[in-house]
Image (cartoon, rainbow, N blue to C red; front, side, top):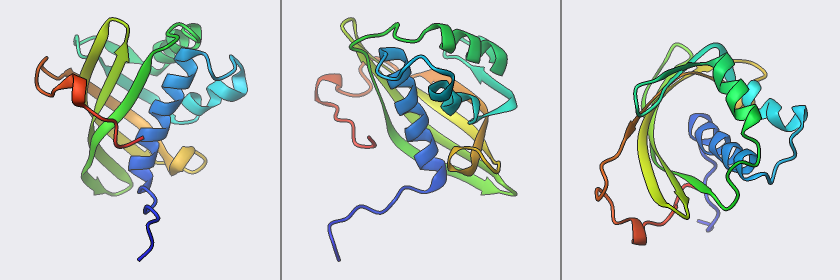
Length: 152
């Protein structure tokens, strides 16, 4: 057996790759072009919704508007995904959970998210995001100073 890593399943690859887009867009390493921003546009379903850890509901339109305007707003910021797990996959839908970690000069935060993804031809990894619900992970639930990103 070789030391090569197995490719991630599409649902897992989509979670990791979209969050890599977020980091690159927000830290400004991606150019502020329509072509670069298409990664997000092409991966969100028309009726996409996001419930933030504070309980606020955002529509696809609001998310796209706010993220487009936030290009380069977080230089030096770092984001990564941990513990992605497929919870259910049926009839073209996948439900997954994952931890999203963020780090900047002010410290580290973490949230657990539940995502609903649907098969969609032409979408990155063949999946469109339909819904995400985020909840803060309690401070101290993981030793932040020793935590290593493993899903990058």
